[in-house]
Length: 121
Image (cartoon, rainbow, N blue to C red; front, side, top):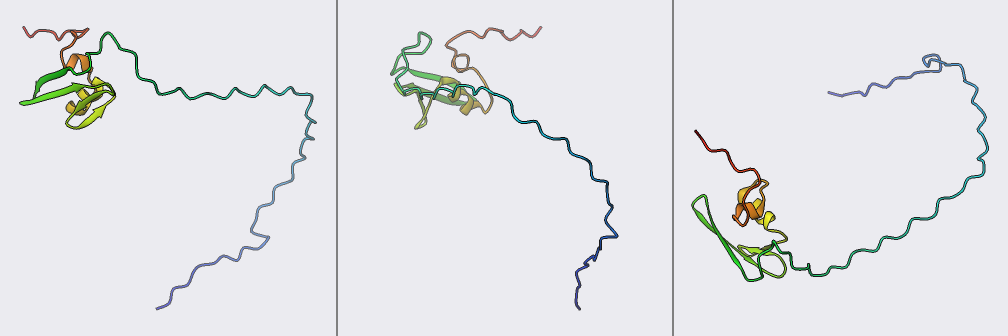
């Protein structure tokens, strides 16, 4: 069994010819002023963050029960340590634990939520 590729032998008669449009003459570029070159951005130096009043002091252990499991997070100078991993923020830890976006301070009950949950009647 042999397969043949279909090839079309289209000649000049099969092409549709369109009348050539007269192109407009291009204008010579006028005097343009070049914009000044943008200033090079300097990368911010990695410096330790200043102590935030809302952040717990270094060495603090935050504990909370979540779905029957005790969660223990230690505040370090680099961030927040949970199960051997270091996170940059307490909200990142809360997101890792819950699997959804949640405020870290609210999750660990360091602050009251802005919109308290409505009570069931």
